[in-house]
Image 1 (cartoon, rainbow, N blue to C red):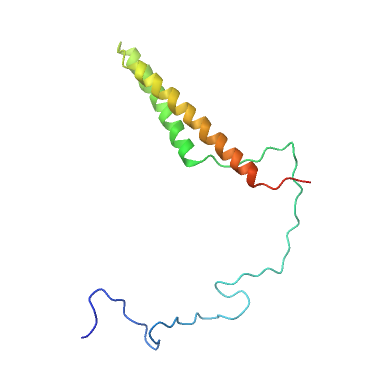
Image 2 (image 1 turned 135 degrees about the horizontal axis):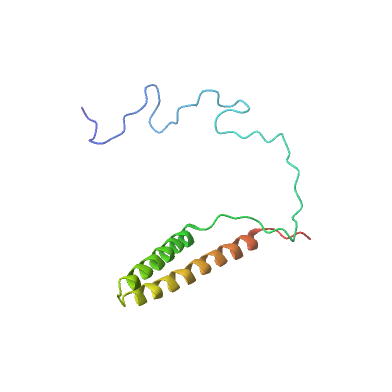
Length: 117
């Protein structure tokens, strides 16, 4: 009675708007805290070493479309259909999209990496 429909029930013993305390809160290493007592040595950046960064998702999708379009073009030409020309054009477009997004990702990654002075 008196509770609105869809309202979240209050926790027992908690006042309205209060956040219940977590067990172990206030101790070092408790949930939500970060122990920063250890230091990690910084490795100098080798200018001749190319960093390995994962391929962006959209570039991966464009690559999949490119491969599927090439397969569709081969199948179309094997069946004697000139529709394969359209598939070749789609393969070319998706190939260019793949290179564009990979290059854009590499440039963005190199811009955020601090240069060794």
